[in-house]
Length: 93
Image (cartoon, rainbow, N blue to C red):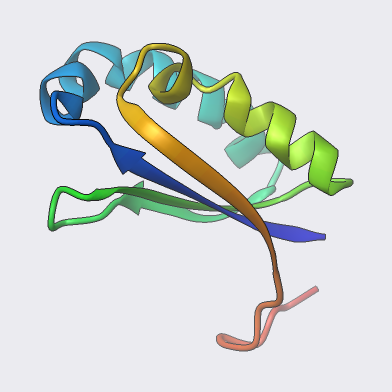
C-alpha cells in the first residue's frame, strides 16, 4: 500500500529543519534502502514536505510519520497521512 505524508512547516520550521535534517534523513534512509520510498522532499515554496512511501497499513504509515524528527522536533506544525494510488508514472511493481 502507498501513503502520502504531507508535513506543514510551523513558523520556525525552516530554522528547525536545518537543525534536524540529518536525523530526518537518518530515519528515512533504511526505508529508502528497502525500496519503500516512492519520492520525498521539501516543497520549494517553504510550506513543508511531501513523502510518499510504501507501508503495510495506514497505522504503520502513521506511526512512521509520528516518529519522524521533523514531527517530534516541531519542524512540522501539523502533518497528514493519506492512502495514495499511484497512476503515473506507471509503477513497475
